[in-house]
Image: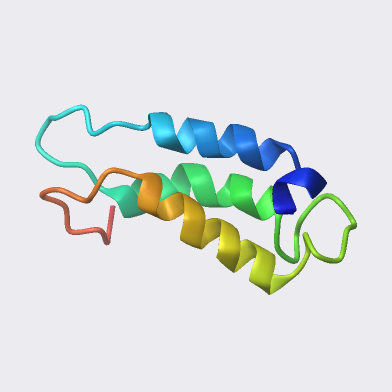
Length: 84
């Protein structure tokens, strides 16, 4: 239902699915999430959503998107998560 109201969520899902741990000394899913993904999620759902649809602006919508997208990221590897 959220994708029907905000089609860009589907494109964001595809982008998140394409993220890979390319090797190197570490990978931090939290860093990728909070720097690259979360700002975009916040534009699409939650209290700062750019569309006025009440469902999109709900905390529940933001949480649902987070719960569905975050697990698509590769797992953290050799990182300390904070600070980065």
